[in-house]
Amino acid sequence: MKAIRTHWIILFSTIGVILSLVLIVLGGEAALSTTTFCTSCHSMSYPAEELRKSDHYGPLGADPDCKDCHIPSGLNNLHLALQTHLVDGAMELYLEFTNDYSDIKKFNKHRLEMAHHARMNLKRWDSITCRNCHKNPRPSGEAKQAHEKMRTEGATCIDCHQNLVHKEVDETDLDASLAQGKIVIREEE
Image (cartoon, rainbow, N blue to C red):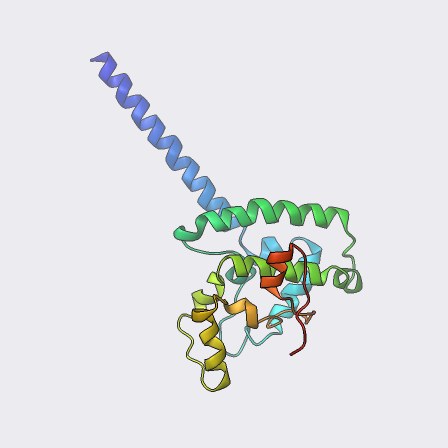
């Protein structure tokens, strides 16, 4: 009888610990995915302002937050969200403390590298964050042919749609960058 009671206590304690850990991970993920948290680093206030002035914000009412584009959502993408927070978050904190972003000119010196890193994430994720809002794009004309590349050549949204929200920087050839392991600027067509 005492052994059975001990067994149940261990089982319920284990379930309680597991549920607590799940709640901590999910709660932490939600807390660390807010625009308020992202812009608590001074350097991220510049891209946040650019977002508010972009076509993605305002009249159409989409008003995305940082996480909507930069953090994959949903339980099926939780591993990507956690990886983004752990790996990219650690890197961003390191860069925040080792670089001077005190004004926009200093920030712009690093803009291409930051944009390229964000683009590479989107490439690796098959632009899943874009597809959360743009579920089934049906372009016409020349864009329709370009969208065929997604099916025939393995392209994804970010391959063609760069510089949509933040200040323009050189577009990068993501496939060549992956192959060469460095930033490759896209050739003018």
